[in-house]
Image (tube, rainbow, N blue to C red; front, side):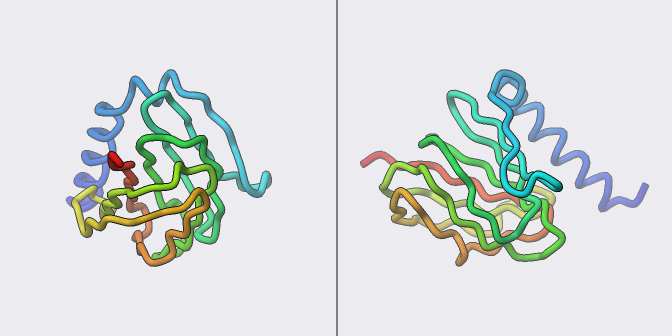
Length: 132
């Protein structure tokens, strides 16, 4: 196996081990186009989203933290989210090896647009709601 594949697998296995409790007890739900659905797991502490479509509206239930994985075939995502609590969020963009690429503070409404946060293919966006 090439070294880049080993690094990729190692990073995502570590992510799984860090979050396995929430991933196991959370509520799984497909959304979007049902012939190739996107998926999410909503747990008490966080929501995990695997978005196959790069132009997707992601329905949320006001999580404190959201993890969005770019599972699209495109290198850039154009997500919008519904169901957020309006306020300030820390947006951290990770590459496919889960190395931090960018950190920003955003003010988002209940229906936020995340188009200006490029997330590479197999990369991750973490949105964390900040205290008011």
